[in-house]
Length: 477
Ligand code: AMP
Ligand code: ZN
Image (cartoon, rainbow, N blue to C red; front, side, top):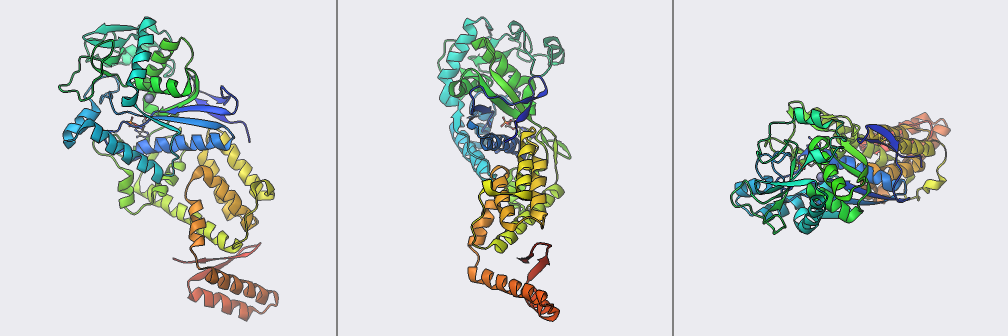
């Protein structure tokens, strides 16, 4: 496999990926706040992370993928402003916070499943890890990075000189750009809450005892506490959407390194946004598209995955109905082609990957090179197209390579094996025999017989395509 190169947001440069422990990767991706369905923008980020995890594993790295589920503490503003997202949603729907959390967590993972996104190795809920958060906050406090004000415990960013390094902003710049603190307890607008005791809201649903009083954690601390619990105090990769660089991840770094006194995460990967023509898609605006909306419009969930793969994860992707239609048509063309190859190959076993030679082997190598180049999925997808289109590639070789590519792309090629298995074998054999006898007629230069076979199959809705290596057929839907 080629060397894997990733763009590290920390330092903003491409770097060869070198894991801390050879052959193993600790990877943490910020999970959802489960107060509503995920919108397709959120899901784009998880598709990107899935490609990363599948690539790491393809490259022989045993990957421990940890994802949190935020079910407490996330206010509508990431900077401790606004209302508690979970509490508001529960009130609006007349249910308890825990009911809301359970419902939307299940909905979230059902969406991941439908999108072919592999389940994380560990999924950890914030409410199950309050004690871990308290222990971590105690360390931050003991190291002198906190102050109490108005009943809450705050992180004092002025004590952490490297604050803002990830966002490439100096403390003064961040300060100048920050909104005037609505929270008057803060010494500095960039300071953030580690533990709330004086809730801004009446009847906060979930509260716990702590050294700072009965209350609940700020949002950022959960990611530091849970990632360190499952991956150690220094781990390889942390990812999330690009919106998290400036506040959430910047604060995660500050508090983690304040607690341990050492570097926390080696590589930071950030996925760019899915945007609508009209602008930003957000859960809080109330107008957002879910995966189910697309399915209700007649798309397959994997059409959306395919749509996502059309853009590099570090580029904005513009969502449009036309784009979705195009993605659906392209995916269908790939699946049709694969089905056609399957019919050509018949029940014969496919070659082992190590036995592939020539073009199929080259395409597969280029596919891996594209992935190794900071996950250049559009290029990897182009390799699949070229492979399937090339009449010079043996159908069995093309299939073996395509199925292998689909272990990362996951656009549903494996399903064509099932579709093929469901086809009437006798029917396939009959058509194959007719195609073979037409070939024989052409060899005899008996053009009339060859044309008669072609026309007879055409009347059944089966079209033949003569390639330089072989004749393929497909049944029109
Ligand atoms: P949330 O559930 O709001 O915490 O968001 C879950 C993930 O989706 C985070 O990693 C966000 O950065 C990411 N995200 C939010 N909006 C978008 C968007 N429009 N496009 C891509 N990713 C997004
Ligand atoms: Zn996080």
